[in-house]
Length: 169
Image 1 (cartoon, helix red, strand yellow):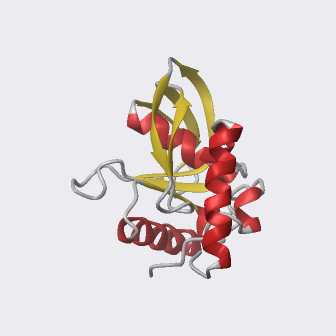
Image 2 (cartoon, one colour):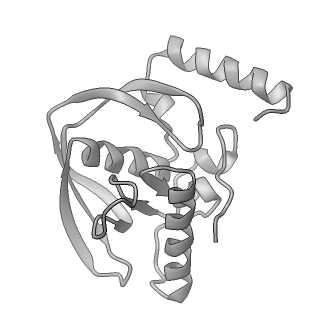
């Protein structure tokens, strides 16, 4: 089921989420909904708070569903190691139609749990590292605009306020 994606201004996007403790059928259904919502948007990653769910849960597919075997599900993810830098244009499903250059690590080692609760680690570099950092930020109540210059952030927020006043946000 495709769920509505919360936009900037929703308080759920600004809080640190609760750890996943129940690895059950409800979690599997949530993960299915998250992938369906992410692909429909379309996007390459989605965090549970973006659909109003207070859980430390992320899904990603940096290939956008074009190839099988690239889906990533991680509960309670944490960045264990990072190195290098990359500065690239970044957007967000919760801040549609806006992008900004964000600096992120080029390589990250991430640990977390799979859909059955088993602990695992994985490494991402390039766009995958960027996606991990972006989605983990979401479950920590951080948006990509929190990582850009105050000037650029204020410019985006002012434009969004105008859209809100016009009833278009």
